[in-house]
Image 1 (tube, rainbow, N blue to C red):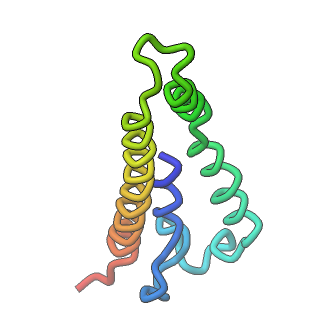
Image 2: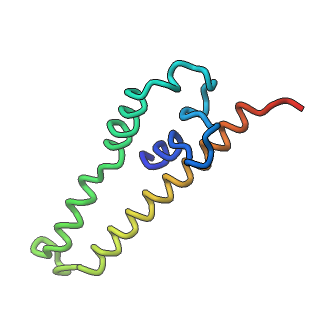
Length: 110
């Protein structure tokens, strides 16, 4: 969810016309509030993407002392790889959704 929101509020470099918050007008005061954007991206999304319990479980599995199966290096590597892929996919999907939302909200009537 955090990666999705981060993608939603991060326009690509080749789309300079897109607003940072695609659901608001381009001239809305929140579009220029750098403190808000930093807080939303780093603070809120950062807290959503912290997988403390996930990481704890991965370390327990790597150590193997508290698992009946012993050390599970392959499973841990796969788990971290899967987590990274999910985070990147959420970011990309959020970015595409942000562009779609912006184009839908700011479409010029024909």
